[in-house]
Image 1 (cartoon, helix red, strand yellow):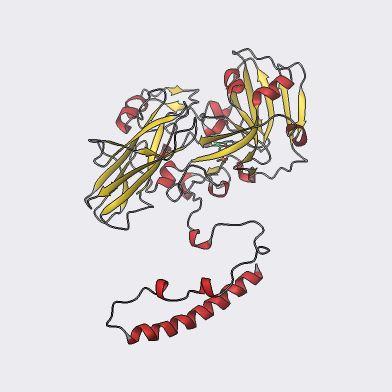
Image 2 (cartoon, helix red, strand yellow; image 1 turned 45 degrees about the vertical axis):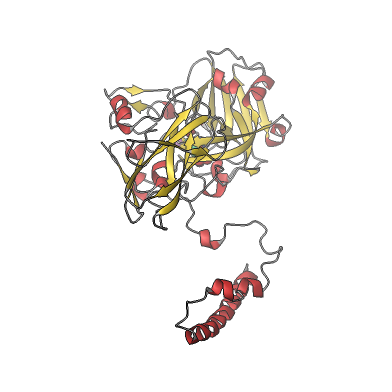
Length: 422
Ligand SMILES: Nc1nc2c(c(=O)[nH]1)N[C@H]1C(S)=C(S)[C@@H](COP(=O)(O)O)O[C@H]1N2
Ligand SMILES: [Mo]
């Protein structure tokens, strides 16, 4: 690294003297249209050699992209150890979230657990209670699937009114990765688990919080993965290295990280995470439990408060993300007038089941203000609700499972703001 810094400052010095010389020339012909120096001059990057292949063993994004990072909101939680940060979805495109900027949520901090120290126990209603090492897990057949993981609290601050001015904060408790993992059903079969559909598995992590959750057997046998790779490489520490549970389409809280134990039980455990937390306060004040599936949702990521229009009227690409815990996204509509009229957006590619889908509306902006909204539809025919529709059921004191239509007010200068229309 030292070498790199010296190299950079030498180039900066040379660039300085070249610019001074160019300045003199341009100054001499000041009356003529200024030639574009990026076209007419030989640039540093063509005059000097670049970085050698022995200098960066594992690359980071180029420093020009240093703002594309996770951010947290200090006042949201009492301590950053039991807290959340947000994916910079306003600055990403496509659908895959790089692990390095994918939101983190932990209840007792991210722990360091090595592969040699890793153990996974399966016990309870099984013929053979088993303990697997990491090496054991690598000998089971594995699959690759792309899935979104959305914290149930995503958009949770917006129930009572427009709150946080950035899509990173309103919708950034989501990431979408390609997982490599073992279908949980194979490990349950190895232990000789009873598999009646009225049974449950209780899953817990090795961290101090343990984050235990009960999952119905039908889901455990369906598409749940015991995953050890994400986007081709080992899970990052903060996402549960070396092994996490992937529970496609279901709330992020069930995606237990640092997975250490799976117990087959005849009843739900009713742990903290599924009683006092992750239940939904309804309009009438009662609490609903077992809201596992994340309903269809979409949001425009650009333009948005952190990604204003900077180029004036004319061609404009409106872009965003859509997803459904029930399956594939089939259609996304975009409105520029707060939901009065809608245009159907183009999907970046056909929607994958329980994964993020990118949409684009390639449009022409006349330079007048807009109330931008997106509305997702999934393969079950479900249509993403308005905030009013959701509030009729859920009131304003809810936290979790807010999948309402989001509105951005874009003014004539291209700036965008989080607003609510009634
Ligand atoms: N062991 C453990 N697993 C956990 C948690 C935790 O605190 N400990 N947090 C859960 C919550 S609430 C969410 S939303 C997801 C977040 O996964 P991520 O940190 O990879 O984004 O992990 C879940 N799994
Ligand atoms: Mo969560």
